[in-house]
Each structure stands twice: as C-alpha cells, then as structure tokens.
Length: 255
Image (cartoon, rainbow, N blue to C red; front, side, top):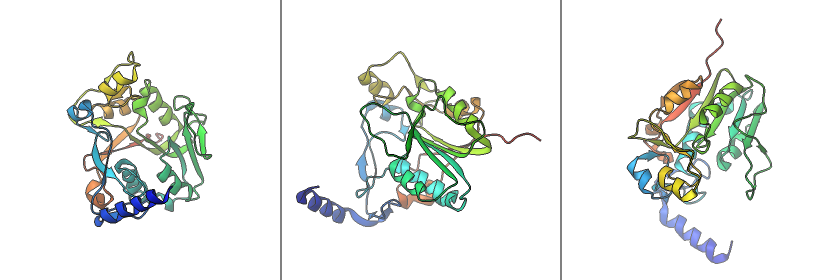
C-alpha cells in the first residue's frame, strides 16, 4: 500500500469515527456505515433482504452486515466458544468469521468450498461439493452456510445433504437473500447468461431469488426451522434490522 493510500485511509477513518457503530472484527467505531452492494432494479422491486445497495460496511476492515450478524449470533447468543467439544462445518467460510472460529480450538472446525478455477483459497479451506459432502451421517453439531444456496440449482438436494451430516439435534444456520414481498421463490435454470441472471436474480452467479416459501423448502429437506431476529440487541454492530436468522435443527432420534 502506497503512502498516499495510507494517508487517505487514515483521513477516511478519522472522518467517519464515532460511537454509533462497532465492528466486532476489527474494533473500529464509527458514526455511520460504508455504502456497499449493487443497486439493481430487481433487488429494489422484490425488497431483497441481504442484497442491494445499503449502508452496511465497516470502513476499516470492510466487514458487512450479514457477516457481523453471524458473529453476533454465534459468539454472543450461542456462546459457541464455550463449547470446545463442538464439531463444526463451515461452507464457503467468510474470512473474518472463520479467522475468529479457527482460534477457538474446537474439537473439529472444517471449512469447505467448491474450488473455482482462477480463485485462490486459504490453506484451511478444503475443496468440497455441498451436493456430495465427504462425511458420514450424523457427524456435525453445527453447520454454517451463509448465502450459498442461491448459487445452487439443486438447492433441496444440498439442504438434504447438509441435514444428513448433522447429528440428531444438531443445528444449521442457513442464510440466503430473501424477498420480503414475494411468496414463491423465483428461479429459472435455463438461464445461463450472466447479465440476464443479474437482471432477474440480482447477481451474475445466482440462479434464484428466494421467496417467503424458503422455510417450506428447508422443512421439505427435513429441518425444523426457527426463524428469529436479534437485530434490536445488536444495532451497534450495524446488522440489518430486516434480516431474520434461519436457525435450523435436525430432529432428534425418536426414543
């Protein structure tokens, strides 16, 4: 980073410094949040939560609202670091969150992603396909899968695979961009043109926009779904007040 860039960054951080917001990843406190995301008509029309142009970024480390929401839930609400015996699978891990979890010395913390040519991945991330996970049944206590399923045509198959590798009574956090005002999911797998996908689904590599039937899709894969909102407790972290958490459970074994 050049001296001029460092000076500009320092001035930016000074200009936005304040007490309204706090980033749990880097500790920076600010009076406002950085504007991030893409301003696309379909995202505005369908009021997609978790997408679109919005004030959601940390000026210092560039964490976004949905990653800070996971931090608030996993670290503050679930108090997960206290349970070192946990076995965790993290799909397409967010760098800042995974760095926090890597330091917790869990019994097992596995990060996986489907490697794409042209991209580089951290050494702790394994190449794996969520449609065919390389684990036995009933293996993990917790699965984190944040904004992944909207990329996968066979999303129900992926949900069933995630459910398969969870232990009975295990939990999964399965977040997706979701339309606030649309009942049924909009999808079309015949569309492969990136520009058309962006126009219809809000991103060049998305294959759908989930509607409010997302819960029913998860239930069809065998999950018990708890839809909760913790935003009022964590407004200072700059989480999206409209974003619900889809905290899913694999039914316990019947006695």
